[in-house]
Length: 98
Image (tube, rainbow, N blue to C red):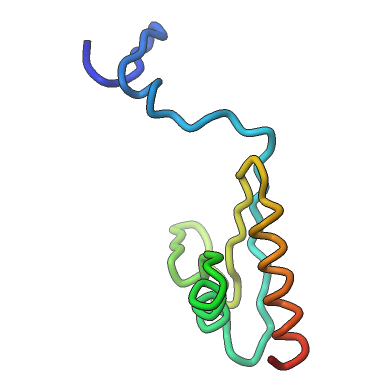
């Protein structure tokens, strides 16, 4: 048998490599209104805190124009609390001008 799940439900390596089921997943595409721009915002966050947000520039759609001032937040970990806490501290520092 090959390494994929077959239509009959039999499985090979694909089943063993599949991620564990998640309790919940959330994704949003909020607008960033800071003067530094969304690209710089995402770059600073990953460089300073190790938290990855994806700026709109990496997305493309054949249906509609992708707004350039957005970023994607995807939360699908079993415990996203540590990353969200770091993100919150980063936002607080930016809000205070730091």
